[in-house]
Length: 290
Image (tube, rainbow, N blue to C red):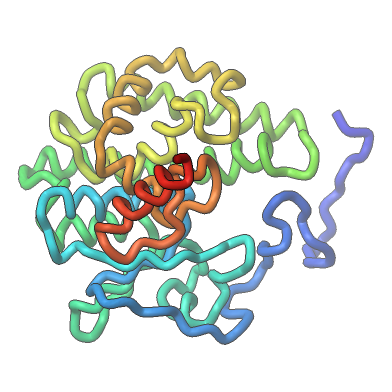
């Protein structure tokens, strides 16, 4: 335990950066910090994002829709570099007043429809294209329950465990223990569900899986926070089975690449504007390796 004991003041004031990896972009007020219009491409759907777990949800969804032959799901993906504060540009704030990625503009609607919050985008696209959301009342309700479970639970995983374990300026025992306990509890919730069901909503792959996989699936696959050993993720064998099955889907593999600026170079596609971008990216990689 630290020798320093923090005593909160009667009134909190923002007097210094909070520290840590994202200190430069954290602030206690909303709204734009600068004027910057967003680019617009040729497709009806315009996505402004980054390949964080929340961003991957939407690119996976779009790639899954395209894999099913929905030409109307073709999209332009524009990179929002959150470390540089792109999300505080005036154009982005118009699409998402909360200044978080991902944000979507559907220009096929009249007037164009903005959609923000990753869960809302998944639901919007599922209803627009009639995919990945069951028609039956019971199955639809179960799917939506697990979708909203993810929306409410993941902040404890990312902003809680991930922040204090991986990003905070110093390692503190209490918050790491507190949020590690919650992360393992959530994994146990999923493991118990997936012990009785192939997918979260039931027997078919839905937006509930697309929402949860980038967080919990990638966590047990060792891709988040370098915390697999710490959390002993191999204990959650049903989550691991589910995570591996989804990871093998070609649309998921493509979705992980879009707006990705980190990790292995062969998995990066900083922006995507045509389906052929994947083929071009592969050819470029093979050429550089040759």
